[in-house]
Image (cartoon, rainbow, N blue to C red; front, top):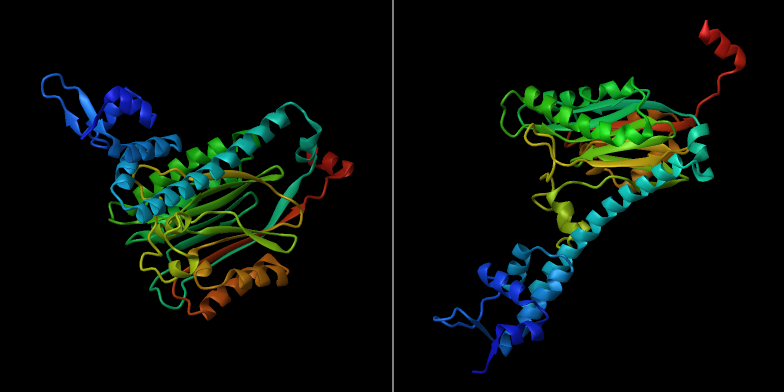
Length: 370
């Protein structure tokens, strides 16, 4: 059998000798023969295909541990793993893209460019309502829903101390309802608030095993809404008659859909459809989804626990959000719809309409200063 020296094999595979030595140590690409006297490595031409695959996978940024798993598969299964990996990369890139857009917007705002002047001059406020229901099956309600002047929040507790956990998580954010946080600071403040909420969940659970909560909240800052999200509660935006889901479920089945392993139809009946990848449990706080949205007068936001989204189709949610004028009536209609679909879980909803705030008149300003 013809052997290639490590130098010749490196040139043919476009991997450096240093990389080949590392891959040997990691048992990712072992040489065909190692000289017992000199320790020199030799490879066969038949190993070039695997070496090139390793090189290509490294170029797309795949970690070595995952490359090892891919190389052990047959071609069809390996293709599926690569497809799943790249879907995850694209999802993570989308989050970073949103953060980059936020930073560009903030820096443009700091430079005084005209495109951001509306954010300085338009004052918005929220007209809101919140409601929660035990449902028709569960023995207790472990959800918490809150709507205030600046803060909207839904938390879905689970485990033996689920109700205290969800209540503690929302309570830890309540200070945001009374304190105006500048848009440039709000994401940092929210990141700190999530840590505080996680600590509050740990204290509320009081050592109970498998207790925790989801948390989805919006905080108004000027003409923007800051989003914090972890778990499978959801936030929707109704704008110009179109409904947009603005959160991403942190669940096992959602990750399998993203990776191309499941279809949405298969996920609906998957036995692990309620299994969370992220939640507040009092342990090391997981990374929450943090984003900033421009709010427009006429927008309607819905925050809900999965007791609504798993039993009421989005088309029906959109119809209720579109056809019911007041936030309070809309919340009642959504809760009734979930219970009408069997009410298998606790259900909580917060509905908020974005309206342009009335500007104070000179006489009113003078009166307020007295």
